[in-house]
Length: 153
Image (cartoon, rainbow, N blue to C red; front, side, top):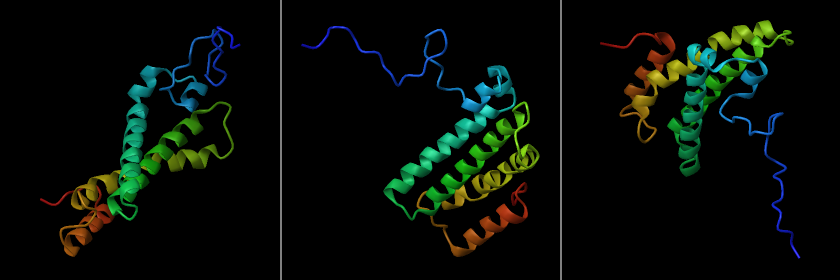
């Protein structure tokens, strides 16, 4: 005969006082004791949401069409943005972790290729993953690599 008592959920994360832990905060930010105000001010939450949105979009597109170029670009941008956020939190850990200085350098500049890809290639490749013409793709790729901050007038 089954007992009428509810069974405890063994897999649920709980804090010391028994309340459920907030799941929206990144783990490393919690370990580094970053406040929510700091995360908002430093745009770490924005970067995390952007990385998550690009990753989910890329996963949905690639699930339907595995060879879709735009889906792969969304995944690459998500990885670069997430890696930049991870490196920022890794270098903030005290006492300093091994290879914190190279991680700081990589984390400070790894978001630039993600910005260049998203600014220069998302729009020309939308919606089917192919440029309107081969010249259009070449111009967009050149724009992303050579002059990522400037747009043609």
